[in-house]
Image (cartoon, rainbow, N blue to C red):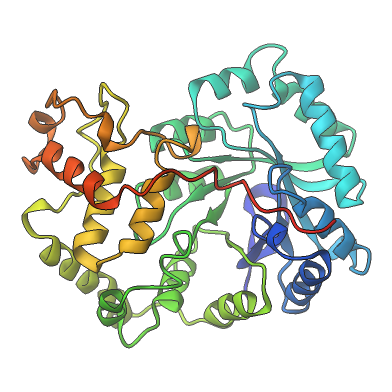
Length: 381
């Protein structure tokens, strides 16, 4: 397992990190076994949050039999929930109790996605003061943030220079944050990647996608594509079973950096995708925003690309069910809110018939709504 410096923290973390979001779906015993196995394989960074069901508790139980000095723990506080310093402090103390530890190595301002969140954190008397106080007391070793916001907003957060790391979404089919990697390198910030397999889409590819990435399994290629970029510190994957853990470990353990032949696989795959989608292919340039009705047009057009190019019905329908339910984590409402104003179409560089595309997508994908990604069926405690 490769280890990389996490920004200016002085810590070296494993290229593959353990995301705790999905372990609430299994029993305590099974979760503990998977966590211990991850440590045995060399994974040393474990990421969790109070909103991940009983994830903190399960990691805490696993820690009883592990060498705490060799494990880096990361947990979080969300500005939408902890709006006052005392609320954040209570949240931190609760997390420490559940994790059965005296400190966390990395504390994240979680889901720093909006201007309102920014104000909550950084205003005079805001929650960041509580974070710094806890750090001075030794309860927190290092401070980072996570964001699902747009690149310009994430850049603004980075340029505060208050953080040693950022955690963001970035994968083969979500590259809008690519430009932030150079800035992170310049600022000596660690970069933690979440959703590296696009919420399972790249772990369970369609036949057309498998064909495009042959001879490489799509999972392997997607994870190694991230690892190939040395500006990325670690890849955080949610794992709840031995099989998921082993598959991700096998993809990244002792991987070889890409040569031109392997790099060209991506270029050819995207060319084929564009050809299949044809005249309706969207580059996701975001010039169509803002939408007066609050529709996240680029995300719906991304789903349209995947539907037409890969026949990714299950994934796109699931993502569409979540549209309108994710708040700042997954902004935007369903295309049924479109009032045919047409404001988006003159701004589209490709001159796409945006309104008819997203309305057709709604008819094809709508199958009700689903709850937040952080809502799990909580297993035994």
